[in-house]
Structure formats: structure tokens, C-alpha cells
Length: 267
Image (tube, rainbow, N blue to C red):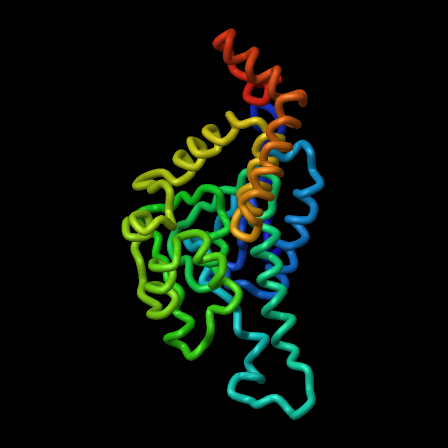
């Protein structure tokens, strides 16, 4: 299977690990892998028990980027006049995946070991939290190959800003994990046991209330495109709904009693 999904319990609810599973290609993004990830996003968006998602790669690498195997016959071949190009919807589907990952209502952690190149770099940019092993390497080499980093570009800009995005997208230079952290792509580094570091990150996110996380992520996602007055109106509504909902009284009461809230206590 190009995508393996495992589920584990949290103190309350569950967390899933989605593993890109094609080590022979360093987990290159085939059509089957993209389809599997989109299907997983659609299912996760409707799963009230799911608190978080971890995305990682099998075999010591995260993701070497898009697989061009299916495009081999089209490389360098002009399109016949009047024909619709089948490459356009194929490429756009990857953009739909990136949108779906950003829109997950759960917290979304990406754990990077080894290579995170091209489309894999794009996947990293969708994360709420990026944990990288000290051996991780990041690059967007498309322009050095005569290709455009088309679908990932907007997500790279959102994650690391215009200056750093231009630096990587226009040169294809490779970043080690420390450089990626300094430029804002990576949040935390793991020098030793990646699984142990990942459990620390999961525990940190598990302290957050699920509906509060989902509402906050919706506001963050809307921020770049929504006029500020409209966004603040929506934020005020989200605040009022949260305060009147089930989580706020539980969380505030737990805080006052110096206890853990119910979403962070084993039931």
C-alpha cells in the first residue's frame, strides 16, 4: 500500500499516523499516493474522535517529491492544437491535496527524516508543526530541472514568507535541518530518537481542546484571503460560540482546580 494508516489512543480520542510507504522511490508522490492522502483527509474531516494526524515517510526518508513516471511520454512533447492538456488536472489534484491537508480540523504534525524534496517540501508546508530529524534535507529543485514548482509555491510562501520562498523556489538550493529551522520551515529538531521526540510533540498538542483547535485553524486558514474587518467579525462569532459551548466551562473549571481538562485525561 502506498499509504499506511495506523491509529493510536490519546488520553481522550485518537491520533493517526499516515505513512508514505514506497521506500524504493524515497516515497515519491504517485497518483495512488495522492489519491490515498486525499481520501484520508476527507475521512478525517468527518471523524469526531480523531484529535490529530502525523504524516511521515517509510524507509528513512520523508518524500522525494512528485513521481514523473506517469508523465514520461509527455516530457518534451508539444500539445496538439485544440487538445486539452491532461497534465493540468493531474497537477491541480496535488494542489487539492495540499488544500485538504491545510484544512484538516485536527492538529497536523509532519515528521521529516531524510529527504523532503519538491512536492514533499510542499507537504511539509501544510503542517501545524514540523519536527525534523538532524539528518533531514529540504529542497525545491524543480527550476534546476526545467520544471515549475507550480502547486507548492503558494503554500511555501504561506509557510516561510516571500523572501525565503524566493530563495528556495528560484534556486533549488538544499537546506539542512538547522537551516530549515532558522528560515521558519521547521519548528523542532530531533537529534536522537525521532519516535520519542514525536511523542513529546503529540503530548503538547493533545493539551488543546479539539473544537477550539478546529475553530482556530479555520480562522488561520481564512486570514490571507479575508478582509480584516470581515475576519474579525468571524473571529468574534467563533469566540462567542466557544465561550458558550461545552469545552470552555470544562477547560476553565479544570484550570481553576489546577487539574488537566477532560480532553487531556485518560477516560
